[in-house]
Image (cartoon, rainbow, N blue to C red; front, side):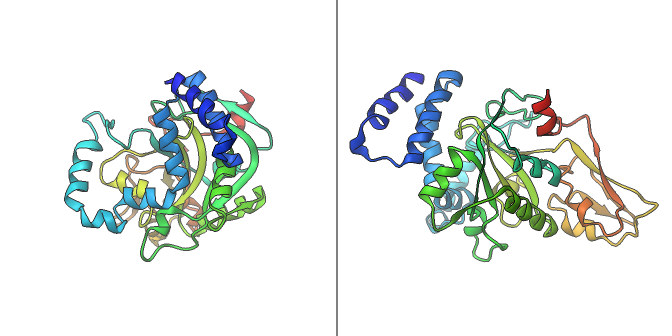
Length: 319
């Protein structure tokens, strides 16, 4: 597979007649490096290119919102039945493998958009227990792009605003900005933190997204709602695409007034109201949205050691 990526470099990167955009060349260069180190393949590269070059088409087809998909629903149902049905051990053999998001509390999301130096954190099995995509390698980490969310854009009546997908670092941010100038914009880390804060107030969940095709590493923070997000919908339907932050919400009943606001903002349906507020620890992803939206301060996050370790970028860098 590494040889295939070398061939791509020789055919496209080194031949000026193809007039590749600067960001495409940068992505090819990173792909070549990943091929040498991790066995990144030509198929991975094509997958990534299609995913980044036509994200709205890619996501709308994947979610079933595209008009073409609606015309061939029986074929799509058959494809999903045989390709993304999870196994008994909660793993997946199908197309969803490698398409993963980790729920993160607001403070962790802030850390990810505030990194002020290039970092390379690899093989984070305890934090990101995925088969391949478990690295955080940030080049030009202060280069952040806000892109219109493909999941929201695919909906007929989406949640607003649209430009809440944060693409972090190169080559990803430059690629999106250069290829999608009408639906993306460069923002500062301060603007990114403001978007995160506003989305938290709307009850939306922060997910750090990792993807095998995206050079086996972290590339974006998405701010997700269960009504629009394809990954959350797939997760609810039995395809494991999202993992816990490593925390679980806990209720202080001495403060709680049983108003039920936390239940209304929980995107994972993990909060139950039956005389008193309780949290289903198996369903809770530890995103912290209920904590920040409780007017009484009756909820908090506690570490759940049965779940993957939290993503604490500052601690990982220090180690």
